[in-house]
Amino acid sequence: MRKPISPRLHGVLDYMTSTAVAAAPLAFDFPKPARRLFESLAAGYTGLSAVTNYPLSVKRLAPFKAHGATEAAIALALPAMPHLMGFSRNRAARNLCYGLTALTFVVAALTDWNGTTRTRD
Image 1: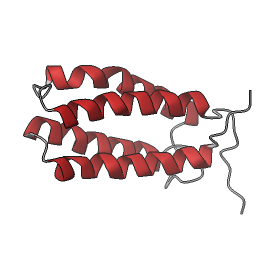
Image 2: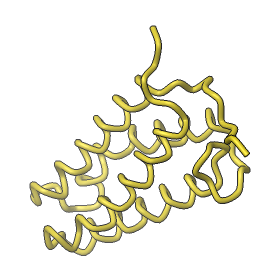
Image 3: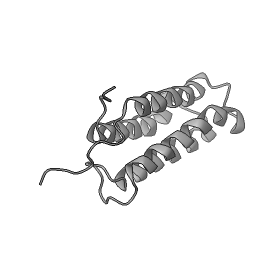
Image 4: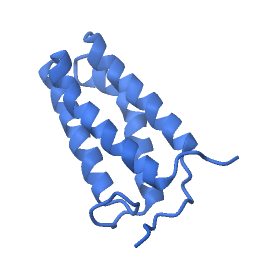
């Protein structure tokens, strides 16, 4: 099966997700532990994206497949975070964790991890 998400599109989705994750705590007035989690996630996603070997990076240091493995590891931890960090009663923050998990696995399933990471010069 042909995977519709190229490395370039994956990068676009990464930066868009980072922006949304950074904005969510302000838009929904999350409690402090949730704000810290989402601010850290946004910074981490942006930093990882900036150093991934794909077309939209700043410096190509991390292999694209390692980027995917890192995202999967984060997604596996996200559903537990509201409970571990004490904000599980905040529906918006809790559901953002669940939604990011789902989004990450859908994007991973549709990403062409063997696609070209070179740009045309």
